[in-house]
Length: 391
Image (tube, rainbow, N blue to C red):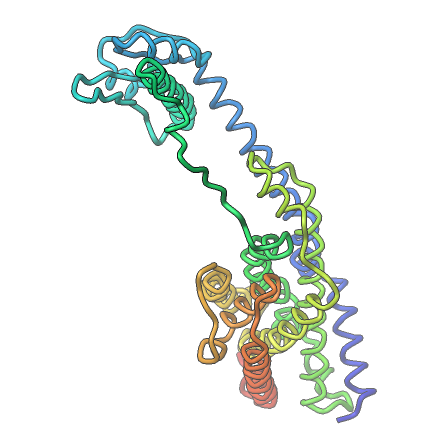
């Protein structure tokens, strides 16, 4: 192979890529603009929904049929409007009130909370009621012990303290690992899809493929140049997505009230060693994705037909990429042979800081083999006249 020919093909494809509006939208606009907008919208909507649910619960009010004075006093202290209703269950079902409490006689008495689990307003009111009832129950127990001359310390014969042995880096890796692998693999296929279609079916549609075949470059050199251009699009999409996700998730005001969750979201476990390992895993996947999409898109006669061929590929990637990012699964050398899934699992393990070098090596080797096979297939398709000039 002649490097100057490959370089010329690569430069030509990159120039066409940056001139194509559809390719630039999928490669740059989606990861760099759309994702941050989605994150801002989601966090604001979740926060606003929680605020509206609490405010609406106070406005709608609660009702209760309770005879115990301590419980009635505790419910009155919730700050939620008290409404009189006869049929508590029906009132909650009809959304006349947010929630309700009914005292069922017995030994011991049962405090039954009526809540509409499908309604965030009702759930917010029920949470306030549950906290009030627990506080009233604890107060009653303390009074009973005090009247009996028993110290209240018998309620706490020992204390329980949960100690997390995972450091901040591992906790952040556990959370980010479930996001990065899936999103990276998905965007690698969708981000490079339009570039591949344009350099295959797009060439046919513009009637420029014949001129390219008549050039001094061999078929294999043309395929390699186009594949490298598609890889560049895929890698650029992945880099832009990582930067966009890091900025969006780190700076987004998450609706969670957990300080631990906010701290994990604010810590991004991306050091040079981690980035290098992730790149070593994803580069063979990028070659595999570019070659596979190239081989399939070559059958298309138009850009629109190419979209119909490659869109299912992006949808097929979703399941193994999502499954590999799920916590609880343990990677072994056999699972390392499953394409897409193995890369998603390894990316999660690298971010978590818990990856076996054996599994890492098997994954990289397997994906290199798949990439080589896909490239050979793509080259074979490009050498067939029946595929190039399919009518």
